[in-house]
Length: 570
Image (cartoon, rainbow, N blue to C red; front, side, top):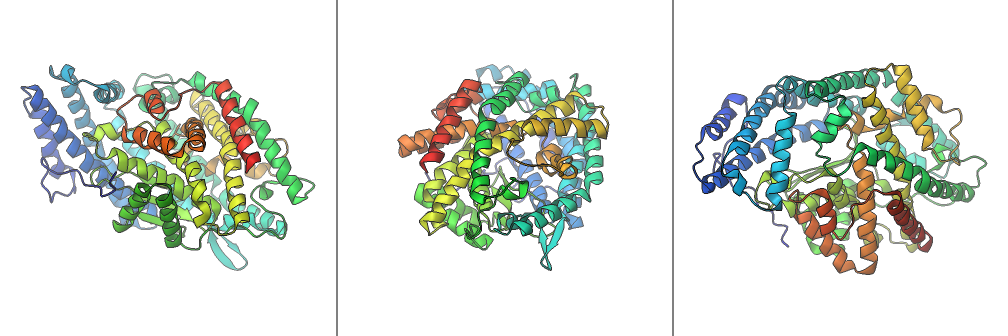
């Protein structure tokens, strides 16, 4: 495998063409819509030209969003993104629907054979079914409005010991052995979040209203059902999600509680509080795997090289192309992401590193997404690279587990390396209740789109309490917990994209089981499956990775027992 990624060659578009406005872009869509397709060979060429145009448009939109999230205070960058979403994207949507219909109506389309075209055409038909012209302005407004979450959060900071920190930077203090300091910083962070609770509530109200209208316009009873169709959830249902929630309560929550009991005993505290979750006993210094973003990148590259030289080469290529923005700073949007760039191929990784183990995990997670981008880039059509999000997260979460064997690059002392692995395995399990909480909350939200803030608060706390371990003492923290949903970016920016993390974690654990038995075979299964992009249905992608697509309680129970046993072995 070679990480020397090649951009999609331009044959249809001029090599120097840059997207500025719709009048400049429109002629290319018009030509594709008017072109006569008189043979199968002409259909294949038409598809290639459509794909080339899609790649160029996608990459332009991605760069506008990347630049805006890197600097939320730059009005010019925000205006560039907003212009694309409000002035260009709506016209693209209308033309894309006409192109989809032209493809489906073409008599030669039935000769497009193989699983790649099956999944591709299934998505095309799904997009035709969902398209409504009256939704175009609503969807454009939603894309712009959702970015306000990053703008609001990008301005949040707190002062600790006379120094200003972003909330991501301040979170480092929650690992400090000084319990008084931890509680002080925990409350500082949440008091700062609460200053914007009304602004975030108002933003969410607007997003809910518009999303519900999009669903009604498309003939759905609610946005949940519309979104399941839009996300292409062909292989599982809302009932499967409910089954997942119950399995988490039954088989995962007790393990999380046992983890917290051990932490409580190790800390020697009478009550185990939220500011104790990431702490170590007095005398144990917090882990410091790196100091700067450049050091994080270098160490991650070394880690990936040891695991598989191709993985490290991918990060090196991205570095050459300046495809990283890693360190937290004021004015930068929260969170982390890997953004595939459909035309040039090498993706962009964005995150808010502050020197913690969680940052290492985020980096290898996004690095797994990047490997997926590299492996799927050579596929023939841009649409073939549109892989299911549930499998995209298998790529990233598996990398978290694979890479643990090579975390010696971050931790020279064996004791620190052991602690880091223990914490990661704990995280593999403790993330499940939050995933179930967010997904169940969204199910309620969109089944009941017309609700008051009081009803929202009541149902959020009800669901949050369902998935809160008994050992965690949250007394007198209602003011913070009532609005803890507001910290979850996905609720605002990518609704219903969260259960994927749970489904993918099951796949990642399965691949890690393979890795423990036969490293080379597991890595081969991993790269082979990722190379398929979106050319297979979700269950077949799992199968290509040597996995079973299974959300049953029995399957989840078995995987949890495996992780628990591995935790005891470490």
